[in-house]
Image 1 (cartoon, rainbow, N blue to C red):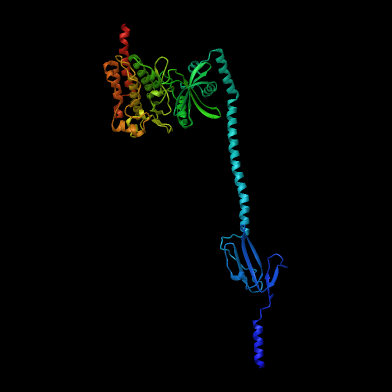
Image 2: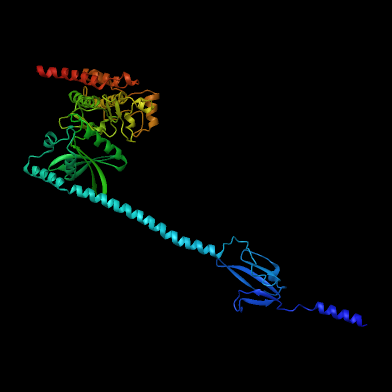
Length: 495
């Protein structure tokens, strides 16, 4: 019996629970003494709290549910059963976790970089502001310099004495030498002394005002910001070539000025109270003599543009490229002068240089020649541009002739192709009429009952040939109209 009793006692001893406190574990919980604890098993856990990962270590009952090893996005626990086994026990949560140290580094980096970039941007803005102020002060110093004040004082004194008029300034020896306008400093002085009186015209590319300079009327064309290149081009042409001619709009000055806290581009010219030929024809019925006078003066201006004048006081050949009744002004003596050189092209035979300029603006679609509409024009040939001017001149001549009374009959003013295209035709609409259908404005039959107007009708047709090279030249038209004028004047001479 004794051996069996001993065996039962041994089995009972084996079935007793193990003694708690047999393992030493790292402890990182509150209340741990010496960062150590004793228990049946060790554990390490991690959990996510408000974006921060918190780690805990200590002793645990090995039968606890927490020792199952489940790991989620927010919580995870691992258990082990050897001495200090939880010291290096690692847990990876299923969420993409970043070590607290890395997060701290990122926050520190952001704290450094954000103010740094802000300071850099601020420094750049301050630098730009300082640069603008310096440039503004430099311009102001130039304007207020002694030379400038002396020049302005001399002009004011001359004005007060009554010896200074625009005509006087334009005709004396103080011009640029090109015969086009005043010296740059004088131009700016004149611009600063002009008072705008009334707006006399407004279009897509700016406004025209009547202004006064010491009691004299001047025209001030104020360019819109989107047509800045036209202002540069006109200023360049007027200040570099000899354009003084009775049938070219007289240039006085050009200036970039500041009004109402905004920059304005001014072109100052002679003022003509009749306005544009377009406006004049709206309200004026012409007789044959006036019709011929208007037509002759326009072609004289166009010849002056087209012809190159050689010598130190010469000028290159110029093609207008936007000739129309709105860009022709009627003077007090009922002669015309050509205006608006913003699209002009210059050519010099001496160096065979063609200066087209850098203007994105195109001409007026209603007045475009066929080769322009179908994009077949030779952009490298100056003669091509002159030939487009002749096409447009023929259309202007048609406008004038329609308003000329014959046998008591006259038509209302209408623009070219008024019965074929809308008021504001598209490029494609004009191309169909002019290039595809090859139509030209209808010439009134009544013109053929008058010998002078019949000759003008013949000139129109010869300006409208589809082939550019077949069209008349400006010089040929001028000579033809001169003969008409001479024959028209003969009866009056005998009388």
